[in-house]
Amino acid sequence: MWRNQVNSFLRRAKRLVKARIRGTCSRSEKKWFLPTGYDTGLKTFNSLSKQKEPLILSREGVATWYSCGPTVYDHAHLGHACSYVRFDVLQRILSRLFGITIIHAMVITDIDDKIIQRGWQENVSSTIIARMYEEEFKKDMRSLKVIPPAVYLRVTENVPQIVAFIQRIIENGNAYATKEGDVYFDIQSIGDRYGKFGGGGESQERAGSASKKDVRDFALWKRSKAQEPHWESPWGPGRPGWHIECSTMASSVFGSQVDIHSGGVDLAFPHHENEVAQSEAYHRCDQWANYFLHSGHLHLKGSAEKMSKSLKNYITIKDFLQSHSADEFRMFCLLTKYRSAIDYSDSSMSDARVALASVSTFYNDAQAYIKGQLQCLPVQDALLWERLARTKATVMTALADDFDTPRAMNAIMDLVYQANCQLQPVSTAAGATRSPAVFGAMTAYIRDILEMFGIDPLHNKEAEATSQSGSFRAVVEQLTQFRSEVRAFALTRQSTTPGKLQEALYPDRIPLLKASDELRKNLAPLGVLIKDRGAASTWELTKRASDIADSTEKTVHE
Image 1 (cartoon, one colour):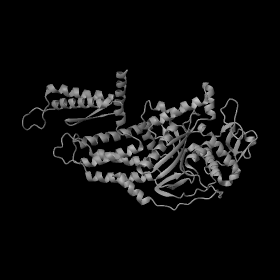
Image 2 (cartoon, one colour):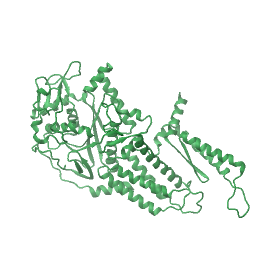
Image 3 (cartoon, helix red, strand yellow):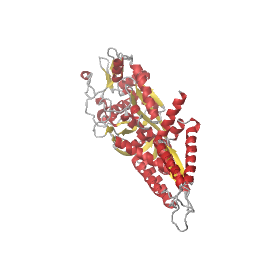
Image 4 (tube, one colour):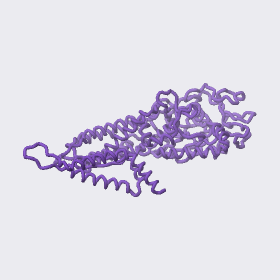
């Protein structure tokens, strides 16, 4: 069983490293330090060191994970979906394959210049705008089957904590207030520690630059402007800067250290750079987040620009799901490394759809073979058992090496291909040796791996949700059985003169055979796929059948 292989892998890889508590910030380097704790046996690319590193967690079997959530002023698009789905896949791999419990916290930015401006445009409060799009975001994530974090944290519900966080940074000598009521982080106060992600010499903000000590200094607190939401603070009314919210809320959940911090690659600078600076200044620690994981951009094919709202080159998640499934998008993400840029196009979505269809077809053919409904020549079961073992090892190695899902999926699809080569139907195979066990093992393994990735290869959940107590499937079963009996009757051969190689069909039964074929063809566009296996037949439902069943059910209820 593949889970036993996982446990064996972890036992071999894991070693206990003596715990050590770091002192206060004394180094003035940008260097990344290997954490102390428990070695998972995995490696991941760390943006702080710019190379693959052993994944070492503070606690055995537990990973603390903080991610930047959405700024809720508009609909989420596929660029957002790509990042959240990719990191959802990584978390599923860690938890379901390697047995690591993920404690995930995500911030919802519900106060921001864009939210305020959208409220003015719609003539409603910024709170209404933020709540509306926050709920849409969560609905989109559910539609994409993204596991929600342990906790969502809103900026507006944590302003007192943010104010206290800023005060501590000022007390530690790493920030200053201006006479106008702004508070800036003092980059010069941390020496050469700034610039871990690059871009350390760039000015980040234009507003208020005359009051800065250094053009690189960034706002922790912004003084209030006319008609803008504001909160009281020791520096006057205002609201938090962009970066401080993440440091405050991550610290409120995880304290002075977090194992993994994730986000899109565009957030590395200045957002994550500033998070690190202010968090390490607050905690007076050498290393606040041990690993930063960044996902690559989603591009429309042929464009060098990322998909974004500001460029108006985006497709909303809601619109996308009108013509594609969540599983198709998830497969699309699996076929590239999470760190890589990814091109979105009809062709790339077609590749994902074909991959899903290939797995589904294999699964149904294998099930038909196991049940004795599909007749084949004797299969090379020793070869297939060896291929299955090799695939398990390859998938395990790939996913332990920076979550290499393309390599893992290539191994899975190669296994499907090798199995399909053995499942070639023949009209008769009486007395042939059968090997159903190996196909049972292969289908179970492939199903488990895809479900770990968040994919339901058979659309079972969709079909069950849209059929009343399985009645739709029962009707299809009865129809297929009736058709099989009619077809078997039509295929009965006449007795012929001895010595003739081929017996003839009864002429008056040929119309029944044609009618059976016509029914099969007519049902296919409706999502009922019937496959003739010699004298017997099998069937399966595609997503189209689920949609039709759902539509019919709604019509009946109405």
